[in-house]
Image 1 (tube, one colour):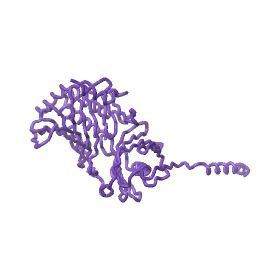
Image 2: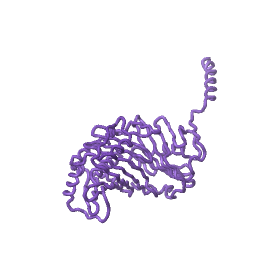
Image 3: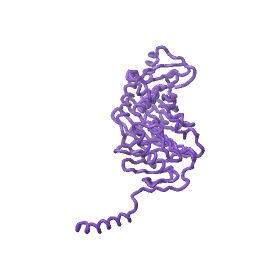
Image 4: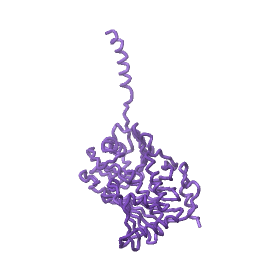
Length: 169
Length: 230
C-alpha cells in the first residue's frame, strides 16, 4: 500500500508528460489541387527494403467517380502490383506478385497511394514532400522515393475502375 | 519476374547482334541454315550501338507506356542498357557483375541491387550466344524462323512456368540480318512489349568508362565518340 502511494505521483507525472507530447502519428498535408481529380500520372520510384533497392515504375489512373487504379512495373515492364481503390476506400488487389504479395498491396501500397494522391491524407502518412513532384515515404520497414514524371489531366476509361475486370494471368 | 527480365535482356541483346523488318512471312521448314548464317554474322560483330523506343502495351491502358534509350554491347560480354526518357537509369553488366544507376536530381546513384545474379546469368548467356553457341538458347527455347521482306525469329520458352509470363519473343530483322529493327515480347494475356531499334552502328569504338560499373561515362560522351567514328 505504501509502495503504491509513492508510485502514484510518478504515474501522474508520466501521464501528464504523455498528454503534452505531440502525437506520434505522421500527418502529411500537401497543397490542395496538386493533382487533378481526373488524370493519368506516371511515376518513377526507388523502393528500398532490407538493404536492397528496386527501381519501379508506377502508372496511376485517377477518377473522381471511379477511384484510383495503380499499376506498378519493374525495370522492364512486368506488372508486379495492380490495385484499385474505390472512392469509398475499398481496396481491390487486381494483380500481385512474389515481390508484392496481395496482403502487402492491400495494407501498405494502398495506404501510400492514399497518402500521396488521396483527397484527404490520413494521419498515418510518413510522407515528406521534397518538391511538388517528389515525395519520400519512410515506414521503417521500407522507404519509397517517389517522383512524378508526368501528369496527363483528363477523364480515364470507366473500365479501369471496375473491380470485376481483373487481368487474366 | 527474374525469368522475364532475363529473357527480355537476352532478346534485346540477341537482336542487337542480328537485324529487323515486316510483311507476309513464310515459315522456313528447316531454320538451321539461316540460324547458322545469323550466328556467323553475329560472330563477326564486335560492338553495337543502338537507340531504342520501347512501347509497353497493356490491355488495361488505352495508350502504350513509352520510354526511350540507348543500348551498347561489346564482345565478349559487356552490355549497357540506358533509359533516357521519361526517367534516367543505367543497367551495366558483364560476365562477373551487374550494376544499376538511377538519376537523382542529376546525380547518378548506384543502387544496392536485389537479386543481381539474375542479370549476371543474362550476361553469361549473351557471351555464349555471341560466340555462336546457340545451344544455350535452343535448350530453353523452341526456335522457328519465317522470312520474306523481313526475317522473324520466334522463340518460345520450353519451360511452362516461363511461358506463363512470356508466351514468345520475336526478333524482326532485315532478310540479310544486316540490322535489327524490332523485338516484340508477347505475354499470354495479350500484353506485349515492343522495342523498336534505330540508328544502329556496328563496329564502333566505345570510349573508356562506357561500361564502368563504378562510374559510367555519361551517354552524351559515348555518343560523341560513336558519332565521330569513321
